[in-house]
Every structure is written in structure tokens, then in C-alpha cells.
Length: 205
Image (cartoon, rainbow, N blue to C red; front, side):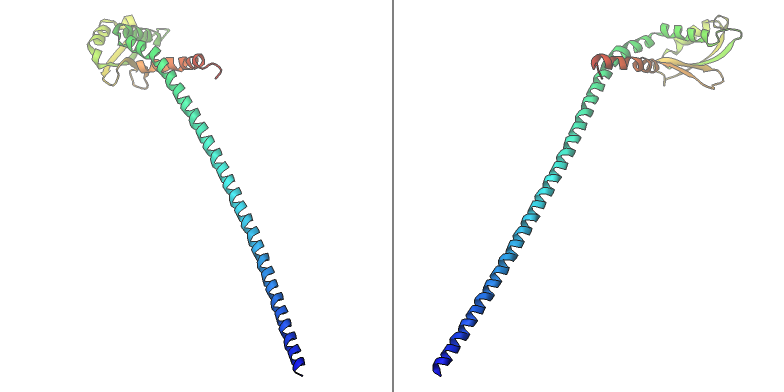
């Protein structure tokens, strides 16, 4: 009887141990499986983070390269423009200003404009001329001495310190005026000279 009880106890013990071992192995296997899943997920997340970071870095580099390229082109274009403007201004500004500082030259231009205002010359025209105030005496004397018959025009002279060189002329009724200032001639010449200068300095552009 005692032996049977001992055998039963041993059997129950062995079965308990086996069940405990099986349960432990199951828990360990599940833990390993879960750990492997976590590891794989972590790898995937890490790879995604790396891929996203590389893509973002590539986009940033692309944008920076584009911005640098644009800034470089703009800088080069600005420098070229400044060089062109410097050369054109040197060629045009000083000679034109010097010419319009010559009162005799301006008188001759005005005479030419007045005489050609009405090419047929059938009737006397009334014109208004706006001139630099600093040369008022010279211009007033010159055109007062010029007879209306000689120019075939009645000139109304006025003077302003807003005009530094050249003159403005138009009908005496003030309906419009045509400007012949030094700035006008400078801009006129620059419009035609600038493209030629660019072509000469930067052929092929």
C-alpha cells in the first residue's frame, strides 16, 4: 500500500514537472517568437527611418543644389549686367552730357526741330520751349534775336531747374511736349548699344 502511494505521488510529481517544463518551454518559445517579431519590426522601422532620412536628405541636397545653381546664375547675370552698364555708360553718358552742356549745340538742335516741325512751312506755328534755368540769359537772348520769320515760328520760352540738360518742346497750347533731354538721348543710345555690347563681351549668349 505504501509503495503504491509512493508510486502515485512520484507519478503525480513527474506529471507536474513535465507539465511545468512543457509550459515553461511554451512560454519561452512564445517569448522568443515575440522577441523575434519585435526584432523584425524594429529592423523594419529602423530601415524605414533610414530610407526616409536618405530620401529627405536627397531632396534637401537637390533643393540646395538648385538654389545654389540659381543663385550662381543670377550672380553671374548681375555681374555681366553691371559690366555692360559700366561700359555703355562710359561710352555714352560723358559724351552726351558734354554735348548737352554746349549751349551752341542745344541751340542748333532747337532750330532744327522748329524748322522741321512744320516741313511745308505754309503758316507760322506757335511753340512752347522749356529750357534749363541756368542758361536762361543765353537762350532768351538768342531766340529773341531770331526773328519769327526766320524760324517761321512764334516761340514761347520758359525755364525750369527740373531740366538739367537739353529741352522740351511742344505746341503752345500745352497739349503735349516732346523731350530732348540728355537722359532721353542717353537712354536712346543705350537701347541700341547695350545689345551690341553684350554680344561683343559675351558672344554666343
